[in-house]
Image (cartoon, rainbow, N blue to C red; front, side):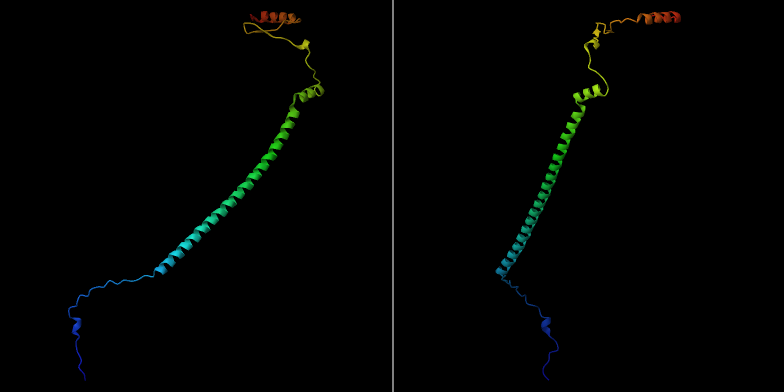
Length: 154
């Protein structure tokens, strides 16, 4: 039988302070550069994709606006020509010559004669007087009789 130690006393012995060593770890510089290159490449592709999508979208909207403008211009042209036609019809229906022809032919009217013109003279009193015509004497006489009978004074 060999010699056996029953106890391991080294566990209870004071530990020597070990000085921690600074460990220098060399990083793989090429690996880091490759990772940075890949990240930059991915970001560049994403930015390029966003720019291309924005360009396509803006072209699409521009095309839509051009089509809408062309349609609106066509509608404006149609409406303008319809307006010109309706104005022509209105003028032809309401012109003075047409009105005069209608009055003469349909209504049997004639143009005024100089003997039919009666002039009105205004006095300083802002009264309108017309020249007396014959035949009113009988009416005036009857009016006087009615006024006398019913007690009205002028």
